[in-house]
Image 1 (cartoon, one colour):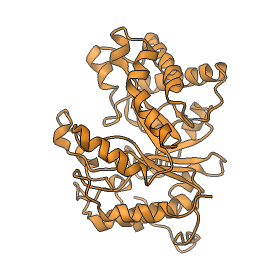
Image 2 (cartoon, one colour):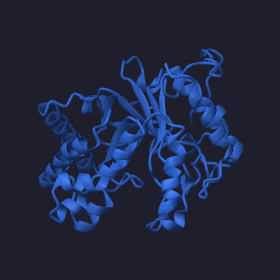
Image 3 (cartoon, one colour):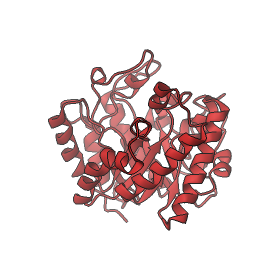
Image 4 (cartoon, one colour):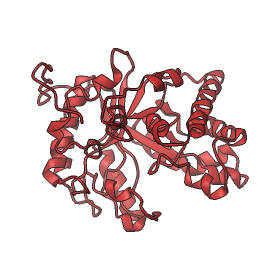
Length: 344
């Protein structure tokens, strides 16, 4: 298991009176299906963010049912991306090509249709959708796949190979179209450290860097409480910097957080979650990160989201800065204090 840094590790900078290099923001995932609450949540966090992330599933079902990629992308993302632009929030796009809550499985819409990204025809749909969604969203960064190292660790090899092929093909399509926007994939930090789907020994991301040579930035997905850290202070100072190593790639945390509720194997609290927000800022400062996003601004009412048996969604239900009724948690004050630092 990973140990905390020893005394030879240089201390992190004191972030209390610094500028910050990183933009901050959330996604529009609502606490429930209640539309007024969802809109109120969006309005509440947009005042304490200087960027937004759109973490989107590919619209497989719509395209398989005959809708064009352009129509599917517009229906899924146009209204929200217009909202972000109206609020002057740059948009980071992240496309999810497998099952975000079960990386050993493919996207639920494909499974339901009996289809797979291993099929050339499905890869063609993905490539068409990438071009279409980029036209709709006009993002500052384009994420072509999420948590690639975790997919490689737990999914069938043919699925991972398909992710490699289709993202590289999509990157070539974008460049041929003249799109110069930075491209990236995300890697799962706990997996890179060997703490998820591993032996506990550090693994790194060398394979990802070889398989996705188009990277102009690197996305990080990090939920340290799921990697066995009992407290935020136990996270090593080099938690992000070791993943990047000597590479010059800009780093963005594109999803992550710390639960305010206890989950199996972890005792947590509202105060512990607030400490994580401050610890996260230290880790971001240490690598001059360019952005940090949390997908959920609010806690989730898991009863409002259909889940298959054994879903891990409850493990992520208490990551919000506010609860499901939009009442602030201590983490919100910690977030606001970091956000108040002038950005470089």
